[in-house]
Image 1 (cartoon, rainbow, N blue to C red):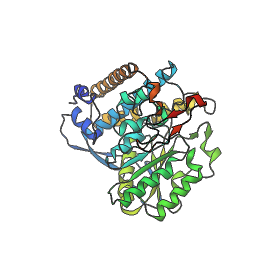
Image 2 (cartoon, one colour):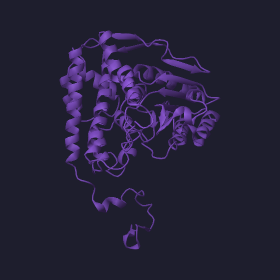
Image 3 (spheres, rainbow, N blue to C red):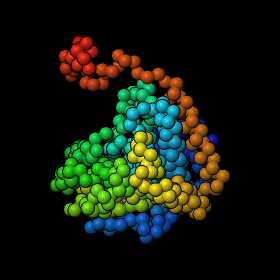
Image 4 (cartoon, one colour):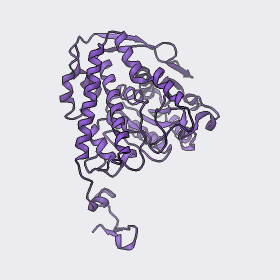
Length: 391
């Protein structure tokens, strides 16, 4: 029997380490017996490497924890969508609704010593790395208790060993190679996951990062989240080779069913072990976003509503995973419904708290531009009268 009442304790603060496993322990009192699930023969495709086993064995608590985390991210993005439409969030905002299996599956395969860096569709990863929904929602609304003090917004969020949230297309990939270089230089048993989209996959700097990572055998996992559209352009219209997992050439690759959280977890577990021992790997997560590229994009001018509805009804990562839990006797319908209800309640509470926080004071605009003691004498504003003097 799963104890959903334990959400009350989890809502206080996200744990600094082992978040998924700790959440699971709080929710499950059932026996910790292992459950083996067969992913089938379509979960993976390999390029110059054997693919992971299709058999996944996890405890019931681990399985339920991943369901809960996907529900929290879905509710978080729904709250973000609603807040944007009510003009509480302004500017750029990119949601990952439909892609929840990727951040949850990736994080469940890593340790907190591993690093993640991604692009601007980053809310799910920020949460999975340890930030609270309150901190994420407050940041989206530009409030001073947001994860970046209200100054970063949707695209610039950070958490321990999470390097953003980056707004320049593809620029996070060479940064990820640099983080992996630092890990190898320091002799750490850790890897870096550098994520980018199919739209960014044609950037030259991505291939430069591949080259350096292979040259030095860095523990870097280059993960392409292929959601089929780079902004409003279908992948096949922009890329001569849409098998993104093969584009590392001299780097092995794996294509993963990115709508299946267990497939993502299994592939990332396998890839992490490989990268630490041997060097880089390229992974392609085949996924799908339900909304537009950003909140300003209706998402229906370059694809049909029927296509989106078909993906929702046949490939949704949460409903598909829910059925798998039911089929394998991991949880009951009532237990999962209770988790859904508590996830919604938690996000509603976090949103209400975030709305009550004020924006940062205007005097804080100049804070955090430079490390204290390294400031330049002055920093200009829009006009000479707005020049700020640090001393």
